[in-house]
Length: 207
Ligand SMILES: O=c1nc[nH]c2c1ncn2[C@H]1C[C@H](O)[C@@H](COP(=O)(O)OP(=O)(O)OP(=O)(O)O)O1
Ligand SMILES: [Mg+2]
Image 1 (tube, rainbow, N blue to C red):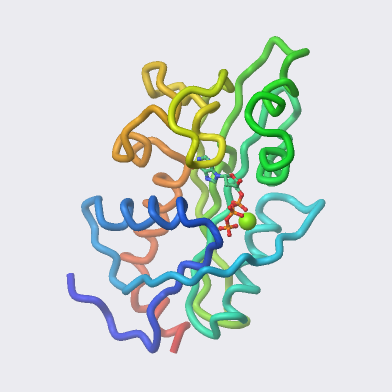
Image 2: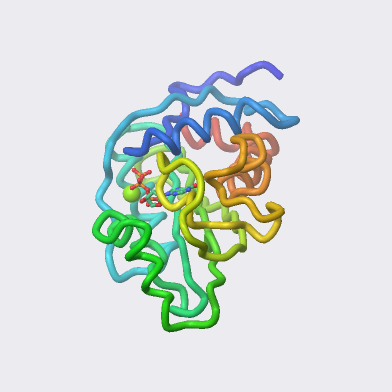
């Protein structure tokens, strides 16, 4: 499919290089090609505290559209422990940064239930420009928290063992295998399908 005319490409705004790498891989694979060009910009946007995952994601995307002055997409990943009623959730980044894998896992030491989900795991947000509607796409992967296994170059990948992976942690899986079942892969497929089906609407909103 040929790319549609848009005043500007959709800018994926993130401060996280590993996310960007996966998003590029996911967009390059799959049956349907995105009808728009996607570029990226490295901005570490402020994130609301004390709000729901969805509120955090929507507000961040709204700010990104103001910053870029055009069409943007953003993404927010939460890691939620069932035993902790969904925490750390959107705050996983700060927990992981301060504690590291071993101490992070100790949070679950007193609980039988080690299950977790990359909840509403990943919220992709899409917005055609400043002040325009923010649309949310939700991808979720269930799994459990285990002792760290595999490469440690991306967040909590080593301690998350998806239920569907045959016993491998995200970190132990190939990129293709992870993307096929990950919160990010699922949310991004929904975003892709929406854009394919609403290309005209989105281009008009962005104009
Ligand atoms: O697939 C993943 N596998 C393992 N770890 C992951 C994954 N995806 C995000 N992560 C980590 C990064 C950050 O520590 C936290 C999410 O926080 P989150 O705000 O979404 O990411 P971020 O601040 O690094 O990038 P951004 O500039 O796009 O907000 O979980
Ligand atoms: Mg962030």
